Length: 232
Image (cartoon, rainbow, N blue to C red; front, side, top):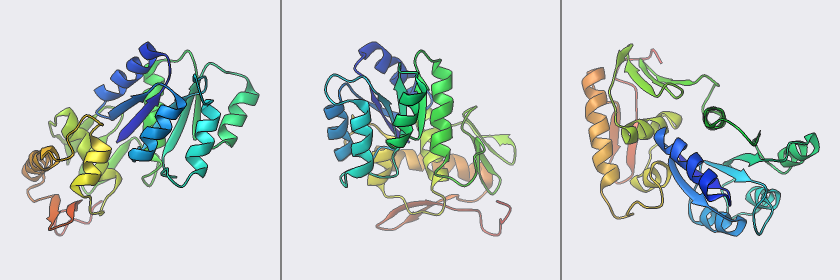
């Protein structure tokens, strides 16, 4: 999943970004409202953490534009992060289109939990555990298992599998995977997505006994249940 952190306090922005990166998210940082809008017009972010007190556009303006401007993905989640704690501010932010509201100061653990909760809204149910057949991915504990047997994954493999499991049955192109699992520093012409899919597929196949990721020639990759396994 790819996240945009919008905050003009450089230290706080980097602390949030670092915390989210440790959980496997691809994270970019914007330090102004216009910077955020420019990045949102270029990249399909899954979630934005949005400060209200920005040096140019107010965060509420940015949120309204995210929701009304056709250049932006309407499915992008918005988590407002601000020092304004009046009920009127929180109601106004939610009415502007925010999905959640977090008041400063906050613990990074709480922010991470809210991010996980918002991103789970794309998937059926609200459980912290994503499931496909006997494959389970715990978004809170950052563990993966097949039939309760743990599977050791790298941080990027975990992030890739989380994206696959959030879009079960969909054919995901290499371009889409690069856009949502890697940040803006990735080379769009690299083979890193193909290589990471390959290592993830080998580990899942070893655990499940049959391939869980199939290649759709000319289109991308799809996460599937093992043949004959309808226990999902």
